Image 1: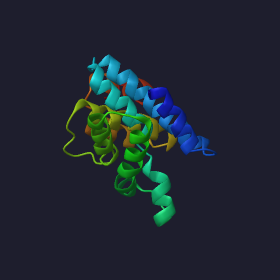
Image 2 (image 1 turned 90 degrees about the vertical axis):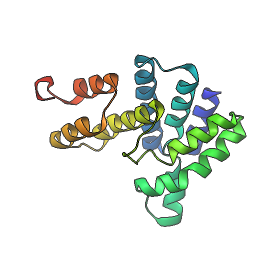
Image 3 (image 1 turned 180 degrees about the vertical axis):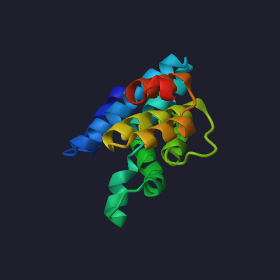
Image 4 (image 1 turned 135 degrees about the horizontal axis):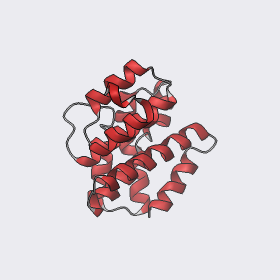
Length: 165
């Protein structure tokens, strides 16, 4: 089912290689961190599904508002994600949690659940690189956002001098 979702998301972002590359990378980091943190099978399925669709609200936000900031993505994304997941036959409980994560993945307070925490960390790992953020920002994000040992290890290895963290 995840492969069908993967292909559906590629079709959804047809012609937009940058956005396709983004969700593929977020999925890869989310999967890696989830496995390293030894998530149970159901939580992994939710996490991986959410990683594929986390930014699905971008197109709707751009169409309606001419911009796609994080809050607009959270506002527009859940309904689009729900429609796609229902069409593909995802379980209701998985769909509901994924839609919650899509609707909160740019909210960094009151993070509840390893799926939520890891999705945020994976998205930051990709955004820190794609947005060419400076080391001061990377260091701040590392200390304020990252909570899993695996996410910290990856972030530190990718961006930070271990003596600085």
